[in-house]
Image (cartoon, rainbow, N blue to C red):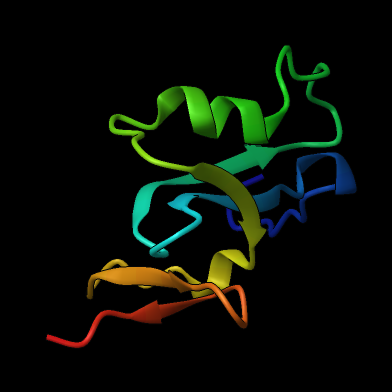
Length: 93
């Protein structure tokens, strides 16, 4: 029927998680990784943290992975990880 509004069921509501691969000494970000999954999706073959590390183009020094709030990722400005608060912050120019 044309004009009918349909709602999506809970099986179509995505879960979004974000991961940062960063240098433990400086907070430099090597890779931002966003993972989207659905309740009806088959189980992932690898953990999101492992996938983020694998997909990081450049890893040097002492790298680690941390999960962050996806809403904190602002791609309009360069970011780094504050090592004390473990939150993403803009890099001062």
